Length: 206
Image (tube, rainbow, N blue to C red; front, side):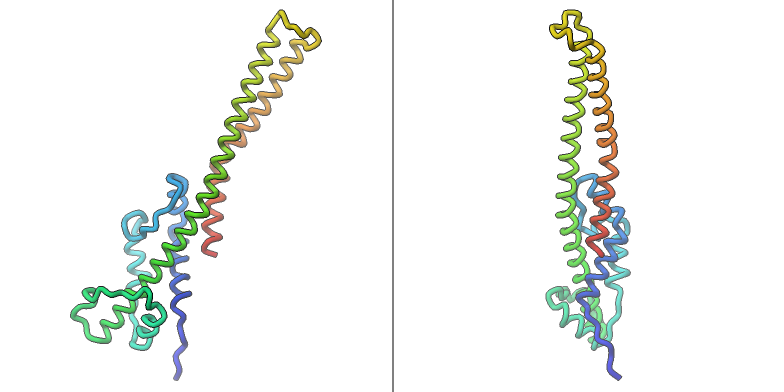
């Protein structure tokens, strides 16, 4: 009976995407806090990342045919540390070598996904930082303009009598209303930035 052929490269990519999905909240928080996410899954940057990688990608058993397929298809990720299977019989050693090789492939796919996420996040963060700066500048200018109108209204020696104190107050009020609206927009930016980063992560692993 012929055995179904397994394409291990897309399988490794799928497992890497599943890992990103599992840690998407952690990735998002890292992007928000420091502008980039760590690609060190097993070094403590992700809760139980080492255990996740071990249980889902490394702890696998392969028969001789499967092991040969893994090592052939994923030759660029082949594990060369023979100490990992020292003392095992030939079949078990080949299976272990294949298991570590497959885990290496998943890890490389994971790192590539994080690289793409960080690259996309940089553009998103830059855009929102720009919007923040523009809104802050506009709010400051509008408040300054409102103060200027208040001063004009209070100036009894107004050199332009046709421009009444009442009109100055109206102009000041409009400036403050515009500033308040821009402040609302500014206050909303953190959440829209979070939503944009989250959508980007989801799109990357789709």
